[in-house]
Structure formats: structure tokens, C-alpha cells
Image 1: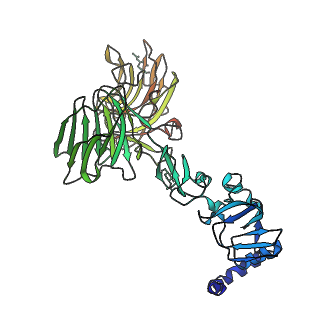
Image 2: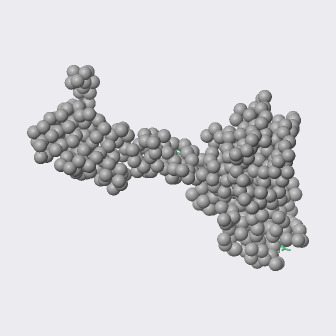
Image 3: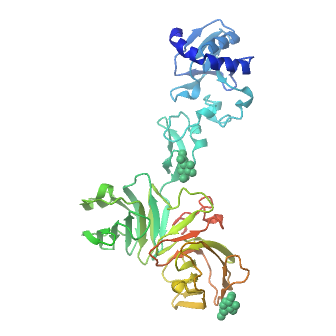
Length: 488
Ligand SMILES: *[C@@H]1O[C@H](CO)[C@@H](O)[C@H](O)[C@H]1NC(C)=O
Ligand SMILES: *[C@@H]1O[C@H](CO)[C@@H](O)[C@H](O)[C@H]1NC(C)=O
């Protein structure tokens, strides 16, 4: 065995000499601080002797360029081991009275600052080094090894770091929660980006009147897309080649919606093989597209009623992954990215880039349903004017303090605005100006429970900068499109 190692030792010689010069006292530091009454199992010793002192065992170990050794002080038993505990998930440190397991460490003084030092993986199992840390998909023996490098619920299962049962794997270091409830409010769309190759999913849906699910090739209503439409009595499948053809390939008399219980539905679109079913039931749609689209985004909508949706995994907000405060929220037509609002007197600040219609909406109800709504409309009327618009339940829309503001918006430049909402008034400001250019007294006042940017009806997406002015719009601040809108 020693002969086999000779060539590699010769190659290493210059390196070893250098190390000896730098650190002449000892080439080997052995620590048994986590190895009392323990030994490393799962690997045969490279060399085994008895009647040695601890120093002799350590010296023997160092001849083999070892990773660790088991030593038994009463008998002088010495087992030299090539690896140390974390080199393979097949190695494990066990209780063994009278033995000590020595880990070869580079520096005793930094040993206790290792991430795992106080955790069970180290204290009990000898997996202490920072090199014991693992990402998702890598072999492990203890969940502690997975947690420091991974965000979100993770565990070591089947000797592999995985997301736990409540999470799905986005990438090697991120587990995201499963089955987050999304809410559609009756008139606007919620968009998600499809990730990690999702093309088949079973999801829960509670909705009464009708829902539409779009699977689009791009993040816009104007791209090639598949559309599943569910009414209380029918299921339709449509294929839309943008600007060319709109064909309905399936029309099935079936009722899959319920307003009081979640129903589990399934759909898949892998390579254009369109399927739709209710969990446990037959395919209601089974149709193969000869020239398949490759959807990258999903949009969901519930017609004139609330929709609650729970998708298990592999959908994220379209801007997911950009963690900068400068990130741009691009939103397609007919969307409102609302969030809950608890204060009644507050400022919003944002920038937008669009040819016309940069709106901020504030509402009493989460449901559309034509409730009490306020809208600060910048650059409406084809970018000629701005105003406060108000909807009162049972009365309808009215426009207040219509003010000519030609060219207030730009298609190429971000323009900054601020709005002050209070129970008494809404005031609209340009940039950092101290005086509003439009304001409107609220009589009667409305209670605001939701607010956010709203995109009206342009073909191109509107772009907002939000997180720059309000960290409540960031993931860290808890914002996810369509989530947390209604209490359970
Ligand atoms: C995983 O994705 C998150 C979110 O985009 C990112 O911050 C992180 O760096 C990614 N991890 C890896 C290993 O790429
Ligand atoms: C319209 O807004 C301007 C600017 O805030 C304000 O001075 C004016 O009083 C408002 N007019 C009405 C009718 O509210």
C-alpha cells in the first residue's frame, strides 16, 4: 500500500516542505473535543496497532497523511483512518466507551468557530468542519449539514439534502413553500413564472363562476398561448397563435368548480400534449398539439368572483431572483398587484415607465365586485391628464380634479410619483415636489385595506420600481403576488 502512494507523495513533496517551513512545530493537530467515548465507523483503518501512546498513534497517523484516528488510551489501540467524518455520508461516529476519536484539524483555535460546532451533527456525530456543509442534492447524514447553506425548510433524507415536505426545491440552495394560496379577485390577472421545467401540475381551486388559465410563451397577454377555460358547466381548451389563429380544440360539458370546497384539478402541457382532469377522474381534455408551444408563464383569472388557488410548486413571481431594490416590476395589462394595507394615512412612492396610464389603486374590498375604490391616475387620457378617480358601491365611477398634464409619462424614462392617502384626501405629487398637483377631498372617506400599482389596458407591460421606495414590496418584506390577501 505504501508503495502505491509513493508517486503521489513525491509530487506533494515541494508542498509538504513549504508547509513545514511555515509551520515547523507540527504537521498535525488532532482534536478529540467532540470525540470522547466515541469512534469513527464505516471505514476500515489504513493501519492498526496496539500498545501505542497517543503521541505515537498521532505520529503514525501523520505518516499516512490521515484525516482522523481512533485511539483507546487503556490498551494503546490505534486505528489510523484516511477520511474524516464528513467525507462520506457512509461514515459515522458512534458511542464507544474508552475510545477517543481524534479529528485532524488545521487550527485548534478556530475549531469552535465552525458553523456546526454547537449542533448535534458535531456534538454527537463528529461532523464539525465547515466542509461538512451540504447543498440540496448532496449526500448527507444529518439535517444540520443541510440547513446552514439552504434557505427554507430542508432535511437530510435518504442520505441526501432535500427540501422538507412543505417545500419544493427552486435551486441548490433555496426551498420555497408549497401550496401557497393565490387569490384572484374577479377582474385582474395574477401572473407567475414557470420554473424548473414544470409542465404538469395538480392544484386546488375554489371558485364559483368561471376561471381562465393561460399558459403563455412570454410574459404578456400577447404571445402564443394555451388557454383552459372553466365555466360552471363547461371546460374549454383553446390554442392561440398570437395574431394568427385562435382555435378551440376542446369543449367538454363538465362541472369542475365549487365555491365552498377546494377541488383538486390537474393539467399538463408537456410537449403540447394537452390534458385536463379532476383528481381521480378521467382526462376531460386529451389533445396533442402538432406544433407545440413552450409556455414560460402562467396567468390565472376568475370572472366576476373570487378564486382561491393552491399550486404545489415551480411557480414564482415574474421578477423572482432579482433581489435589488432597483428591480423592475413589469406587469401586463389588466393587472393589479395589490397587497394588504393596515394604515389609513400613508404615502406611496414609485417610478413608472409607460406611454400612458400609470395608476395606483386603493380599495376597501379585496374582491373586485365594484366596491369602494380610489385610483390615482397619472397620465391617463392618452398621457394628457391626471386625476383622482373614485368608485362608490352602487353609485359608480367619478373623476375628480381632472388636471391637464401632457407628457407626464414617458415610454423610455422612469418618472417618479408620490401619493398621499388619508381618510380626508388623496394628493398626487410629481417627483420630489412638496406641493401636490392634484388633490381630492374624500367625502365620505373610504377604509383602505389593499393598495398597489394597477395596469390598465396597454399592449406593452407597464414597469414600476417599488422596492426602491418601500421594502414592503420585496420578498424579504413578504410581498408575493396574489398571496396573503384574504384571511383563512
Ligand atoms: C438560488 O436562487 C436564489 C434566488 O434567485 C439565489 O439568491 C441563489 O443565489 C440561488 N442559488 C444558487 C446556488 O444559484
Ligand atoms: C385640485 O388639486 C389642486 C392641487 O392639489 C388643488 O389646489 C385644488 O384645490 C384641487 N381642486 C379641487 C376641486 O379639489
